[in-house]
Length: 362
Image (cartoon, rainbow, N blue to C red; front, top):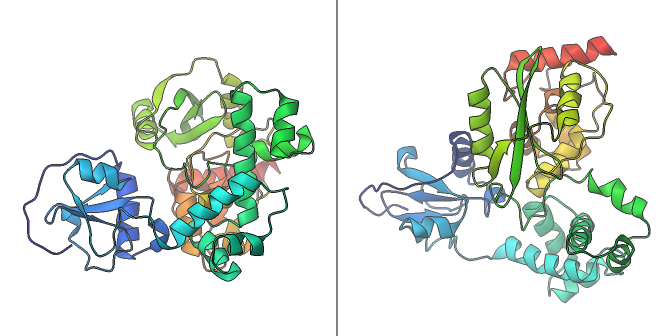
């Protein structure tokens, strides 16, 4: 990343708040970010993985892309040192394991040791790869893949009974107890900027200012707090740059009303379906946040321990900061170890008021 070259004018659809996250991951050489974006250096015309061991470039020379393909379209070449255009190491191993899990499913008896042997690796190596790349156990990923197959069968016109049988679900209750609780997509399909999504939105008033609710026909994709309609809509377009976004009318008025009620501290009355794009680790964090009782708080350390990853405190904080459905996924209930309020995307004042409303309603 250190050869000489001239700066060039390039285009990227990465919003500024995402670029800052990517830069922090770049500076820390965070291998967990590999595969989620690449950094391209204007002065060298080269793009790299976040974990590239080469010396860090100047921030002003760096531009981010979600994929190497996008970087190459803008004239950048892959780094010969970190080879960002190749799938290797833990990522490749998990991709191969995922294909095996997709074939066999959760209830068809494929055991972890047998899966490792099939891939010519050891159970320990495979377990570490899953933890590093997805944050999930193989069984958890297999469950997500099975649910995905079930939904695809229904979309393709198969009957519920036939889809249940072919995917190995014992009953409809097994499906519904998992469907709305599972946030996000599988690791192979996350972070596509809302491609092929149609998102309707509505903006309502609350004691904390304006609330924007964005949703697809399947569920809620965004809940933002702010003061100006135009700014909230701009944030939605930044979050889902490739989605088709339009005013939602009355299509999901009951969801909007429910969220406003929760902002005011009232207990949930409806189960709100979610349609989110997320990494596997984000999904696990957001699920854990939904388990925090109303009026209560947890520290980032407590959330990390609950996930079985006590060293992942910073990763938990990042997942909270990137939560696109505030209120529904209550990231305002996570605080610092000393009890003080940490950063909140919509302002510490709103975080404080949300907690006060919830406690007053208890």
